[in-house]
Each structure stands twice: as C-alpha cells, then as structure tokens.
Image 1 (tube, rainbow, N blue to C red):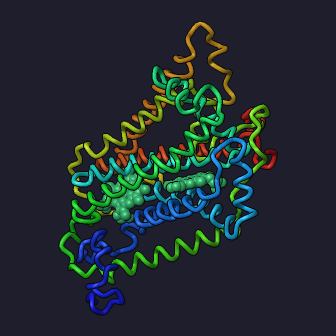
Image 2 (cartoon, protein in one colour):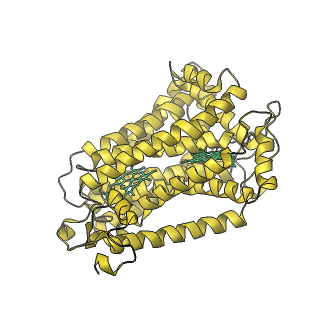
Image 3 (cartoon, rainbow, N blue to C red):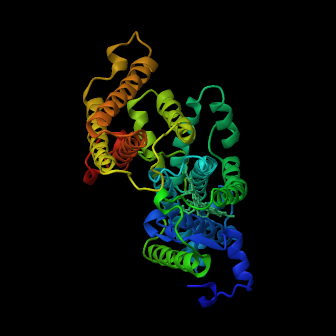
Length: 433
Ligand code: HEM
Ligand code: HEM
C-alpha cells in the first residue's frame, strides 16, 4: 500500500499534522496490534476527551461549597447533554487510569523501559502520577458525601509523612479541614496546573518515543520492511480510537456518574472509604504502622520504578512478551502465590492479637512497621531465589515475577477494601455491606 491509495492526501494539512506525531514511514513489525494493544494511543485520546469535556463542564461548574453540588445537579438535569458530558468525563477518567496502568504493564513486559527508552519510562511514571492526581483532585469537585469524606481520609494520611506532610496538608486544605479554600485549590490544580503539566509531559514522552526510533521490536524484527505511516498505521489507530469512543459512549449512556447527597462535614458515613484506586493503601493502613503504609511501601515502589531502567540486564529479550515459556510459567506461579500470600496475610493479621497490645513496651513502629516490613521483603527475596532456581529464570524474568506478585497483591488488597470491609472497616461478606 502506498500513501497515494489513502484518503488523506500527502499535501493536506492533516498529513502534516500526522507527520508531527509520526515519522513518514514505520517498520511493518510495529503494526502488530499485540505488540502495544494501542494502549498509549488510547491514553492520549482519553486525555484529549478529558480536556474537551472538562472545558464544557467548566462553563457551568461553580467551585464553592455553596455552589458546587447544585451546579453539578444543574449540569446533570438542566443542560442539554449536560449529563452525558458529566458521565463521559467520569467514565473516561476511570478508563484513563486503567489504560495508563495497562500501558505501563505492556511497556514493562516487553522490556521497553531499558535504554534508550529510560527517559520515556521515567516521564511515563510522572504521567501516571499526574493521571492519579487529576483523578483525585476531580473526585472532590462534585462536593457530595462520597467525595468529601474520601478526600478527608486521603488528605489525613499526609500527616504521616515526616517534616513535609503536615505543611503540605495545611497548604492543600487551606487550614485543618476541607473547606472553600480546599475546593478552590483542588479546582485550580484540576483544571489548570495538572492538565498543563500533563500536556507538556506528553509532548516530551512522544518526542522521546520518536528519538528512540519508534516502539520497541524484537531483534528478529529490527530490520523489517518500512511502510508508509499513512494509511498503514493511521488507519489502524483510527479504528482503535473509534472502538474506544463507541465503548465510552455506551458506558456513559447506560451508567450515570454516582452522585450522593450534598457534603455534610458534621456527618461522616460509616465506613468512610478512600477512592477505589487508593483503597489498597487504606487496606495496608489497617495492618501496618501508618508511617510504613503511607511512606515506606509507596516510596520503595516509586524508587524501584525509577531505578528499573538502570538495572544491568545482559539478556537481549526486548520486544518479546514474557520472553520464554519458563518466564510465562513463572509468571503464572507468581500470580497464584501473590494471590494466596496476600489473602493469608490479611487473615493472619485479622486473627492474631494486635502486636501493639501484646508487646506494649516495644514502640508500634517496630512491632507493626519495621518487623513485618523486614519479614515481607525477606520472604519475597527468598521466594524469588526459589522461583529463579525452579524455572531457571534470567534477570528480566525474575524482575517480571516480582512485578506480578506486587500487582496481584495490590489487587487483592484493593478488592478487600472495596468488597469486604463494612462498618468500622471490619471484614464482612460483600452481601452484608
Ligand atoms: C486527565 C485529565 C482529567 C481527569 C482524570 C479528570 C477527572 C475528573 C473526575 C474523576 C471528576 C469527578 C467527576 C465525577 O465523578 O462526578 C472531575 C470533575 C470535573 N472536572 Fe475533570 N478531569 C480531568 C481533566 C479536566 C480538565 C482539563 C478540566 C477543565 C479544564 C476538568 C474539569 C472538571 C470539572 C469542572 C469537574 C466538576 C464537574 C463534575 O463533577 O462533573 N477536568 N474530573
Ligand atoms: C497519560 C499517560 C500516557 C500516555 C498518553 C502515553 C502515550 C504513549 C504512546 C502513544 C506510546 C507509543 C505507542 C504505545 O506504546 O502504545 C507510548 C510509549 C511508551 N510509553 Fe507511554 N504514555 C503514558 C503513560 C506511560 C507510563 C505510565 C509509562 C511507564 C511508566 C510509559 C512508558 C512508555 C514507554 C517506555 C514507551 C516506549 C515503548 C516502546 O518503545 O515500545 N507511558 N506512550
């Protein structure tokens, strides 16, 4: 196929726009859908949708405690297509989080975090942080019971960060409690600073992808034939975009964004839960000392992610999903053990007496922080040695297995928080909530 057979002429402004995003020719091997699943492109489209629907909502949204809730009711019930715009903004935000995370996993499992893609990975991590922050700051804006108390819980966690936690909390809230300054801060971050940072970083992210010579391919495919980007790549991207848009539209027509009663600062619902993406963290807080749950675990994860591209790997298995059959089997094993281990941990922590009451003389940061942290890290280390030996894994495959254990573990913690925690955050069956 050549560019002449396409419906976008090479002299048209659209073609010029495409050339700002893509090179004129791409390797045929990069067109394989299973290489990227189109996830990065989907994330980019969802950000555009968020900016577009967000700007529409901004015309009618009032960022004050007196006006916010009513303005959202007005958007829903008083405006032509207002509810649709609100629903699209809501579902697209959730999809964006999922798609960005899946994109991270695809990049990780095809080894695309290594040089020369290290900066793309690191800026990708920053983009993920921004996606989470835009979801979080948007969460407060409807100003209903759900959003008010979820944000109260999350911002109260900031105080466990030594030295900087309390000043950040005070600056963000504009005092000790959520009020009009908080809403205005969240609104400005949500509709100004965060989207701006996101657009700048996306530009850099895309530039780095081109600088690295396009998406990663295996060595076997490195010299595959070059074909015209338009229509070969552009038409494929168009199909993915249309399917995503259709899915988002159906979701938004069928399911309304949740809106509870107006926020009531003097009545806290029981249980008061964080937004779903932070529920794994809230679950950790039930089992560990707050300093470890809020600072040590997330920081270890963050440092590990930034350090990842600099780990020396001699094997040349980039551009291949899961590398060898041994790697795949170890992955399944790791998923099963992450699942069982986390459930076992929750059950043991629930059934055993609270270490703080048994060993009153020992500070709780040691009994419920340092000791369990060392036990967990030690167990993972020994378990990885066992996996490596059992499946004769290379280094990349071992790192993949660690990632699978962690993702599975956070999934189980989150599901426990969502479905198995009732009044007073006690463990109960989902049908009793
Ligand atoms: C990646 C980007 C964005 C994400 C993830 C996001 C996420 C969210 C979320 C989760 C909500 C709460 C909606 C609900 O559940 O009811 C929200 C509300 C809102 N967002 Fe965004 N948003 C983004 C970008 C923007 C932008 C760029 C603007 C405007 C310039 C904007 C304006 C608003 C407004 C005015 C509301 C309050 C009205 C409502 O609740 O529908 N958002 N956003
Ligand atoms: C708003 C969020 C993001 C957007 C819009 C975005 C967009 C994209 C696009 C369009 C691509 C090329 C096509 C593809 O791989 O699907 C890509 C590649 C890449 N992304 Fe992202 N990305 C985002 C977040 C992330 C995150 C969270 C990470 C990882 C931490 C990441 C790391 C990378 C890397 C390393 C590549 C190069 C992959 C390769 O060469 O095969 N990105 N991104």
